[in-house]
Length: 84
Image 1: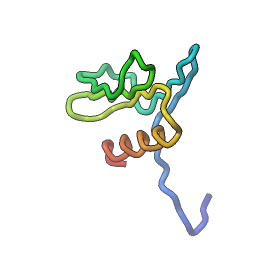
Image 2: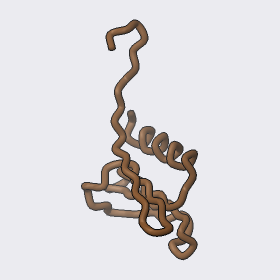
Image 3: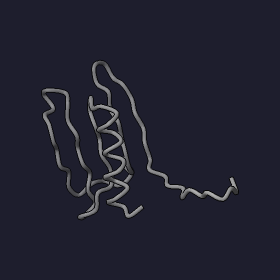
């Protein structure tokens, strides 16, 4: 904990769940209602990503049936948007 090499602690909220044939990953803060959302993909194909914005600021990403690499990219995108 007090070693010479220090790492900055960054908390990005993350939650996942599975319902029927859907795997959902939630990255970010969903406690604030979004003022704008951006959908990539299609609900009908059950593979999509939804970005939640409060004003112009990205607050969260919801990923449906995405790869772990996509989830990690979402974390990085949110971290950069929040300035962490």
